[in-house]
Image (cartoon, rainbow, N blue to C red; front, side, top):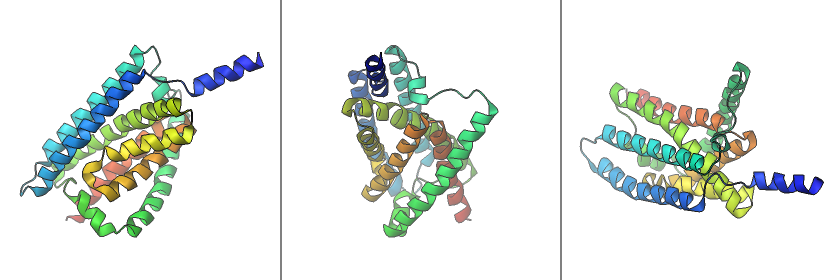
Length: 239
């Protein structure tokens, strides 16, 4: 009985959320997006009157497409979506706890990343993202919608799904977290090499949080808040 329990526990720990072919399609979609995102970002940064709303809309649609594809693949494999999202909230206390964890995570990660940004030359990094930040109320509104989308979709895809798939593939939690973080950084290649490294590190921090909590919900909250704050800060600093 003891042996079967240990075997079942190990099997659960390294259980895949979907089949290998589905994961290959997800990675291929991310590779295509990284390529097209680079093209769109180059056009945006070079334009006299950049169409940021179009860029936001295309990004938003892609992220929801990938979210639906991942969730559908998990369900098709016979697994519950809880395997990538974590358990549902069943009380206000659980909701508040995850919001509190998200706030603590955001504070710690913001301090840590601010130090790294300063060491990596914050002026150069700022130039790499300035062209995609919102200008005006209309763009800010769509930016916040995109930020919430990123929080939900990216945490589900990268931390809930891909991280689990890589952990199952490598039979190693650290390897799964690092591989997922590397793919997360590569998907943001349009922001430049140094920011890709920074985003990968940020992704690893989210990965540790998701693995510890056995849920992506605190990460969703912190991710959506951070991205929204970037847009609001950009608007305030431009006035």
